[in-house]
Length: 320
Image 1 (cartoon, rainbow, N blue to C red):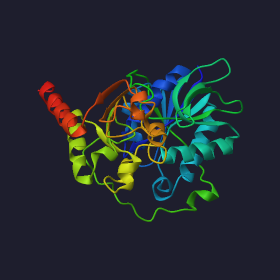
Image 2 (cartoon, helix red, strand yellow; image 1 turned 180 degrees about the vertical axis):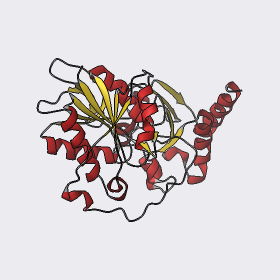
Image 3 (cartoon, rainbow, N blue to C red; image 1 turned 90 degrees about the vertical axis):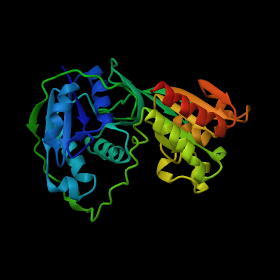
Image 4 (spheres, one colour; image 1 turned 120 degrees about the vertical axis):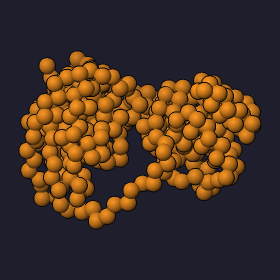
């Protein structure tokens, strides 16, 4: 059976959820071969095997940690040349999209970014994308070379499918560009205890209607009751009420959770572009004519300062 390369996003051996989703999609196309790089790469094998990886190609060298993306591109190119896959899949993170673009140029192939679904086709994998600020849905395939495809988080379920997960060392020859840009320091992101915004199954966002940084506490309370991530509209971020790292929208982050709750957000196209592919959308807004209501599955016309705390209390009661 044809093999599909899957780039592993991990932190010191802990595999992140988008990679497990990629393994689900890869099994639709062939046999997943995972590529794990950097410190802890070998420790990823059990989780990858549990979710369908027939092989795990690993490589660890100082270059992966001390320099930017080029060493990882070198490694993926080596894996591509060794395996001759029918596709290369990567998560749609900022770093992985840069790796994907550089790899596609090197191997003379087409690239598809931010896919939200993937299926096998007679002439190669077919990707579904949400494009032009989520105004259109397209089905696309690469017409030249090995398809390089990045997939948005939450586009597929995580499904256990035990496989061999045989670990093999990947031999990598680093290019002259690999050490061109060095990482001189790192600052760990301050943990909020909440899920990563782009990976969360549930996102609760606040907008202009929250009316102040101090009022985001009620948005956070609802999010914490649901085990959700917290997002914000551009208006809330521009006003200084919430950090830009939590902005959802065309100039922020794109999310595609199972449940998206928009509180006090009017629904401008800038915001819709970043959350329109969410599976279920709920909006709370006191303006019955707000554009967000054209998009939602469930809408509540009411004051968020009354509705959100009641919703939080009800969630806590039901969770016991």
